[in-house]
Image (cartoon, rainbow, N blue to C red; front, side):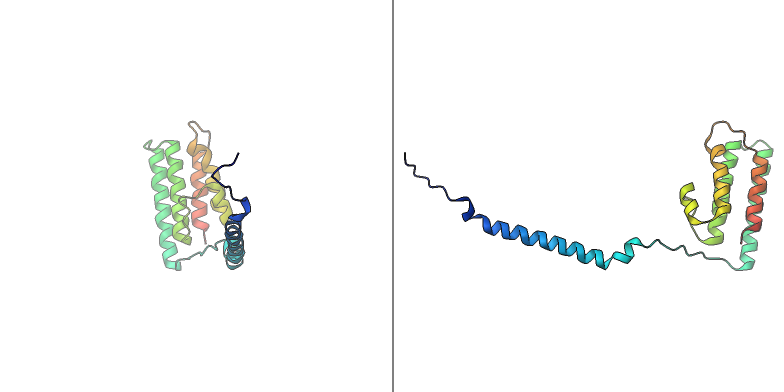
Length: 158
């Protein structure tokens, strides 16, 4: 039985699309290699922290200001206007703001693991000791000891 429709052989129209596909794949691979070589150093380098130390006079003023804020917080806690949890939260914010003013590094929004990566052991130890009382409903933490440790860190920083 003869039909009026004649079928074309499959390879009659395929070479054009095959060539286009091969050219596109080669271009994509070549561009990947080019950009990896071009950006090789930029992608792997860690950002270096630029510590901006204020002048000595300014540092002393900042220390006095934060020691005063810490004393006010301790007084508010002693008078019962602050709970243990709220005092620890305020103390954590206070020390983070202090470090930011002394170094220029924004640690206010950093997690504990990010603070560990900064290489500031005093800040790391303090923030780690604040975590449990700051987030727990009930705590047995010694807040007076925490006030004293925070005071020592502020007084001995830089």
